Amino acid sequence: MGQYHYLKNVVTLALSEEKCVGCGICIEVCPQGVIVMGDGTAHLLNRDDCMECGACASNCPTEAITVEAGVGCAAAVINSALGRTNDACCCIIEKKGASCC
Image 1 (cartoon, one colour):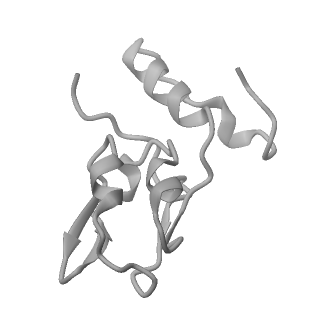
Image 2 (cartoon, rainbow, N blue to C red):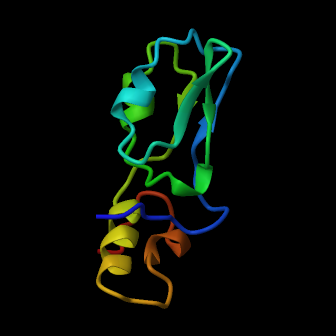
């Protein structure tokens, strides 16, 4: 399976390089390779590749990473894999906490 890209400029992923202690756990758990290490801290390589699974934020010991994890990411990846070309994820227009699936 190739690298999937999420929708442009809608990802909630944020990284505070000031809080990062360079443990590298986020790099190990990110299934999309969005985070890289450089100069002793983590950096975002391509935010739009994030599928918002939440693994990085859940495992960060200093809470340097935040992301609103949900099913929208999975829906976008699955819909794209199925060849659906219109909005791959319906969740971006829903209110937080509402499910589109």
